[in-house]
Image 1 (cartoon, helix red, strand yellow):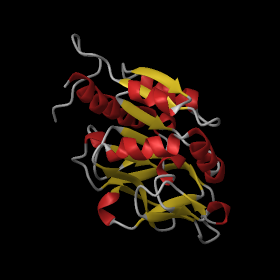
Image 2: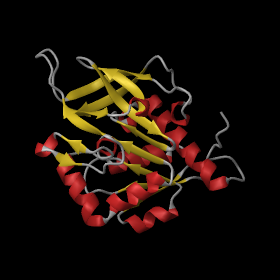
Image 3: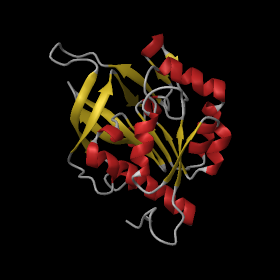
Image 4: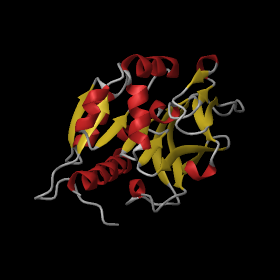
Length: 224
């Protein structure tokens, strides 16, 4: 796979913008992305997106608050336009869930509606605790996707913390699956849009590989 390393001499490093949504794990995501050699900037307004080659939305918390923030700031419209233009996007946790039509959380919270589907809560036997928290095996269904470079299709361990999961209406969106009391989609991909339910920044070497792959994808755009 011909993907430019963002640290290659003579090439412009990828400019990655991390959306500041007012809570959660911004710093750990930014530090992890910086290890790839990309130029990382935390942004607070949609206008700043235009200076970036790739966008990371590290949502963590409640989707009601997340969607309120996106609408109040105009990030909702900007993210829709960004993904419609097939520009590199990496969503994490709520950055995945917000892409869909509606979530059961908050009594039925509308999402961005970029992809058809819904977010549902785990309803599991007592042996399975909710939230689903800890390491679990992820199986990649689209191993040829750029975000999967250097990862084994048949299983890599990543760290999860969530009570809700995505049910895409279109099966082809599914990038990866996980099993926790049953199989569920834990990552999606379409074009240059990728999003995961697990947290790469908490997933050691394999998580850093996800960030490296995304930075390399964005670097291609910067240097084409």
